[in-house]
Amino acid sequence: MLRLKKYILSNFSALFMSIFLPLFVIASVIFLIKLSTYTAVIQLTIFEMGKLYLFVLPEILFYTLPITFFVAATLSLFKLSNDNEIIVIFSLGIAPGFIIRTFFKPAFILSVLLAFNFLVVAPHTTTLSKNFLSYKKSEAKFNLAASEFGNSFGDWLLYIGAKNDDGTFSKVFLFNKKQEEEILIAAKKAKVINDSGILRLQLMDGEGYSYSKEKFSQINFQEMLINDTLKADLTTYEQPLQYWLSKENAGRKKHVFIKDTLLSLFPMITLFLIASIGIVQVRHQKSKVYLYLFVSIVLFYGMTIGLEKMFQYYTIPVVALSWLITTYAIYRKTIVNKF
Image (cartoon, rainbow, N blue to C red; front, side, top):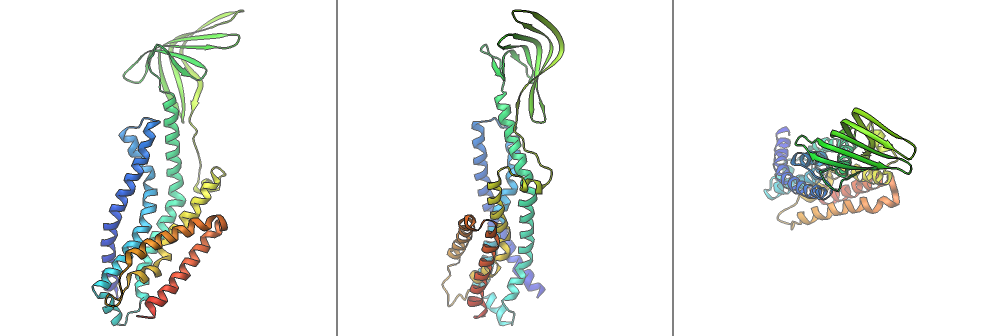
């Protein structure tokens, strides 16, 4: 029995990798194209594009692995049926339930990994990706350059004499005109600093002038920080549970939780359907395995999305139990009663 189980799983693993790799590459290309659209708003280096890709990698794996498992397991049984090996297995007195038990362990492990992915890993990577893009957008607003027309920096008008190779600025002038007072600041050198997502302008070795109708004042400074900042809208959380329970984007989180929970359960609740589609009598049945695979995936996603508004969180047990009961009935009729 152990050798037979290893033989079935070896056929499954070979098909799994041959299906997973193309799906993974296609999904990666789609996500990279989506990421490239950000370059219309912000500047991204190749390293930063790779960083963003790593943030979406768990999401790519989450959506490709369940479908790959379903397709690979079904096609591996279909291959064994075409080679008449399934008939030989059943002729030796081995019940169809052995096939279900063989795939149960990898299905269970995959479901646990998928649940850990979307419950624990996804909140972290989603927050990192969102904060990174928010920071880059705020940095883009802070894209200072040497220009005779000046730059806008909050309430300040900023003139830069030259931009150095190390990213600092030379001969910097800031002007701020209020209702009753005007302020002029001149510095020999300045640089942009990032403090936890907040961008500030640090001025070094300069003078400041403040004048109005009543008074005129001057100060000399070695270092000054302009605190009228452009702040990135960053999201913080301490634990995954805090992320899921927070009210921010509550509607979207509920939709993701329902959909991803059912997708995590998909490998386990489709075991009976895998056997029903994959095990065929080649001499007496016309194979429609690819059609059944396509219809099954579309139907499962359709039920998940279609019933969500009606049942809310109850969509999870409704879809899971109805899918399990229906596929078991099909399994009993097409496999158990015949073999």
